Image 1 (spheres, rainbow, N blue to C red):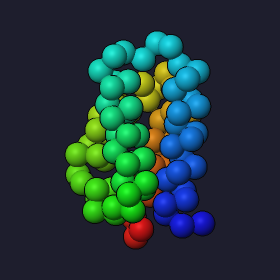
Image 2: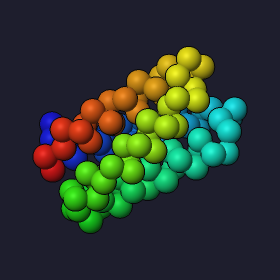
Image 3: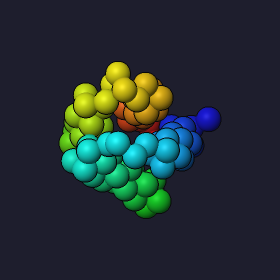
Image 4: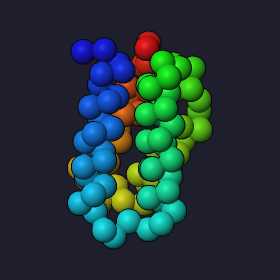
Length: 90
């Protein structure tokens, strides 16, 4: 499976997980949704350079700090996305 395919799969998992969580604060939800949109746009436009922008990983990491213990599934998915982005060779 390519990095792009893995990211698409993780985006779907993240979207499903976010639909199940009501208690995320607005700032964290905005960070996650913004990062998801950036990843989706980069994949849709075949723009791997956008996936390597440091702010993308920073936003994902910052969002997970707030809910690491309360939402382990969400943290796991985001951690996988950060790993894929770190190794991206799309």
